[in-house]
Image (cartoon, rainbow, N blue to C red; front, side):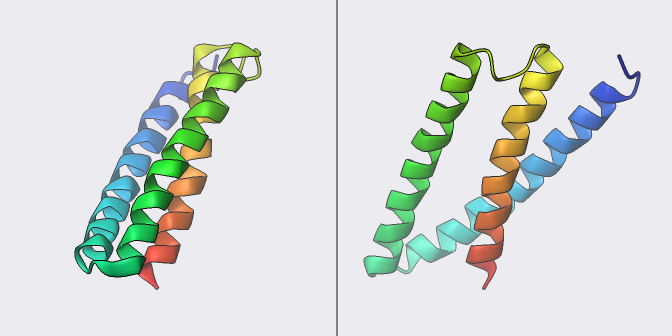
Length: 93
């Protein structure tokens, strides 16, 4: 095992947490505006979470999540990072 693997994993987790905080703030501002835009954002937020959780659960149940705990964690974080980054870009416009 790579001796720096856990450090990289921890850094990637930290980065995901920071970007997630940005998305939470941006979504909160959007939802405070109310109306149809806020409603769509709330529905999108919940449906994304359920979809991602279901996909990760299926990956784990079928053995596709990775053959080590590190690989499983990295795969899960990459899936979330992709969604979080896309949301940050979309909400920042």
